[in-house]
Amino acid sequence: MEFLQGQSTETAVAVAVAVVAVAAGAAFLLLLLRSSKKPKGCLDPENFKEFKLVEKRQISHNVAKFRFALPTPASVLGLPIGQHISCRGQDATGEEVIKPYTPTTLDSDLGRFELVIKMYPQGRMSHHFREMKVGDYLSVRGPKGRFKYQPGQVRAFGMLAGGSGITPMFQVTRAILENPSDNTKVHLIYANVTYDDILLKEELDSMVETYPDRFKIYYVLNQPPEIWSGGVGFVSMEMIQTHCPAPAADIQILRCGPPPMNKAMAEHLENLGYTKEMQFQF
Image (tube, rainbow, N blue to C red; front, side):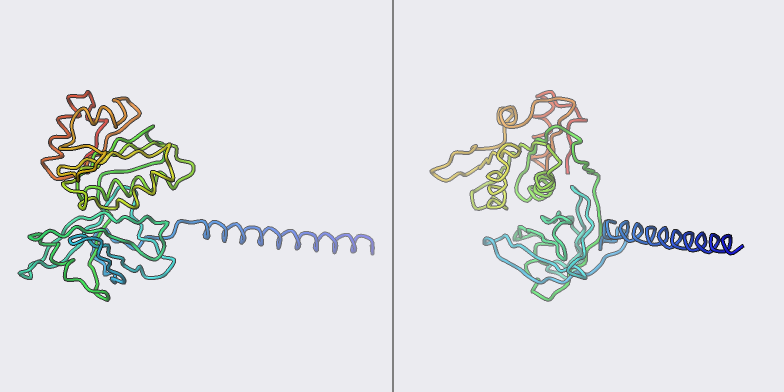
C-alpha cells in the first residue's frame, strides 16, 4: 500500500513538473512571437497625424533635408517600399495645400523619417516647407500609392528619374541593396538641368561604390559643366538601350519625373518593345 502511495505521489509530482514546463515553454514562445512581430507603423491612411521637425539642413539654394521625429526612438513610420505620404500645409495666401512626397528613409531608420524637398519659387507646398522652422509640426497621412515591392519579384529594375522624381527610386534602391537576401540589380538613369540640381548625389554615388555589381547609375544633364562624362540633353532611346535592362518578362522599368518627361519616356519604352506590364509610373 505504501508502495502504491509513493508511486502516485511521484506521478503527481512528475505531472506537475510537466505542466509547469509546458506553460513556461508556451509563455516563452508567445514572448518570442511578440518580440519578432513587426512594430506597428505611425501612419494613418485616413487621418492626418502631426510630426515634429527636429532638423532642417539646407543642401543647396533651393533644396533642404527635413528630419521629423516619430513618437519614440524605436517607432517606425510604417511606409511600404515604393509608396508615399501626403503632406498638408499652407501656401503664401494661407490656403490649404496637400502634396505627395516620398521619404528617403526606410523603416530600418528608427525614430525618424526624412524628406528631401526641392522648393520652387512659385510652388504652393514649397512655400510651406520654406517657412518651416525646427519645432514646427507637419501634417502627414498615408501610406499612399499603387506600387508594391517584394524582394526578388524581378531580376532587374531599370529606373528613369527626373529632378525630384529621384526620391521613390532612391527609396526602392536602398531597400533592395540593404537587403542581403535580395539579388535584384538596379540600373538608374537620372536626368536634371544642371549639376547643382542633382539630388542625393553623394548618397547615390556611395551606393554605387558599395554595391558596384548591383547598382549602376547614368547621369544626364541638359546644361552640363565643361568637364562632364555623363549624358547630355534629354534622355534618349539610345540611352535607355545602353543603360537599362532589355525588354524581358522578369524586368521592370520604373519612371518618375515631370509630366513632359514621363510622356516622352513612355513613348521611348513603347518604341523599344517594353510592354505595359514591364513599366510602372510613380
